[in-house]
Image 1 (tube, rainbow, N blue to C red):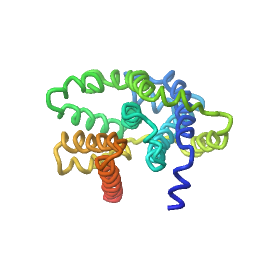
Image 2: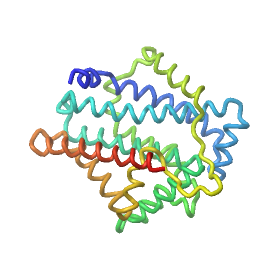
Image 3: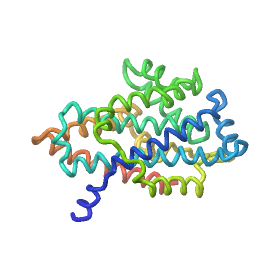
Length: 280
């Protein structure tokens, strides 16, 4: 319990914002060299032809991963410290909404690479979205529509749409808690150092390869889809987690049940993800 309490006191929110700003800055550099008409070629060219292009792509990749992970830890810490009770229900729901939006930002980033993982992620995203009754076609036309428009929609949403939506949901929160950038030199150093040491992944289809996987955070859903139709595995199951996450703010029996449900959901999903990693 002591370890959990100490971990919950870490300023994960500040760290996530620092990583976000690094991600935005490096993303602008990458976007200047990116061609949505030829996504895979421009990604490979960035690594091999543009001076230090591989570094900027790696910096954008790893800072984005750190931003998403630290955002999740921040939400967990807020719940553990019961700071969530200091927020109104509407503000908490908006802040909870930043997590799936951040996940979509991360997911569309994988798609934009245009490699094997990105291509497979795009196919799954379209199939899951189209499985939604009545609204599936409209949502797919707005978010993806990769089959007809290529990367156009994904690129615009990744660069502008989802970023604006995240800022709308989080703005009231982040403006109240400014981040001291000069205090986080070690975090900058770690992200930059990791980007220099490890290149961002680029998955190329190998002859005879029969299994293709999406992003690491999508492996659980991908595994569940082997047994359950896309609508239930890709829409209903994640939506149940998001709804339960929003209900944690309730200071009654439903709030306590929501804590139990989200905890159980995360453990089960983590186990399924680990099984999927070990299976191949």
